[in-house]
Length: 112
Length: 118
Image 1 (cartoon, chains in turn brown, blue):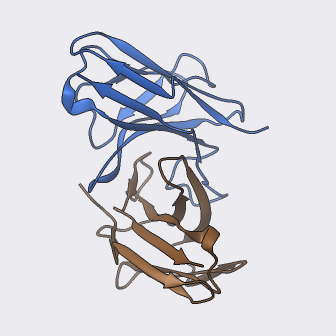
Image 2 (cartoon, rainbow over the protein chains, first blue to last red):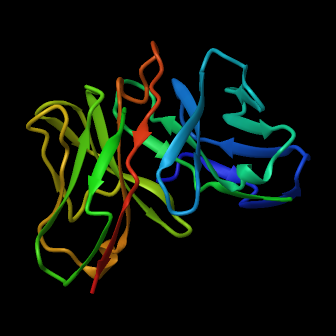
């Protein structure tokens, strides 16, 4: 079952613009993570936000979490061509299970 | 260098011929897991392991087996592969399981194994 669903599925912007991706999930969570994947390669961890946090920053990344709406957003500011990739949110399944559930991802293209 | 190593990177095999995809991590992580990635379906968890000799099913375990005899290795076994198991497979490891509320549960991913079953 898909816990996380991401919106939009694809996003195309110009270099220097901001990119916003959204993720919704269904069950209670302890953490929500964002990953980046360059075409066909392994995923790289970007940022983790805990259920008791509302906002977190890391460099040009800003993540928000609204547990009442079961949603999160990832903002990439001042985008670069090198940010072109697919971005995935991932949540635990709540409790103490080892399940990690990914969204279907947003494909971001940043045009130089 | 901290890494998760999968082998092979590419594999073409025939239906029914048993195969094993190996996964090894050098970070002394307790938690390891396997995923498959298919177009339009994202990443789906196949199996995970919380520690040595402790494994459990993810969302799509049918047709797969795993074992965790040592902390560093977590092989994925396809006893009788079928064409619907053609996919891109990823192994990942982390210090703690995804829902752990303490320290970071950042997962490190291998580079992937592209499997084609004909």
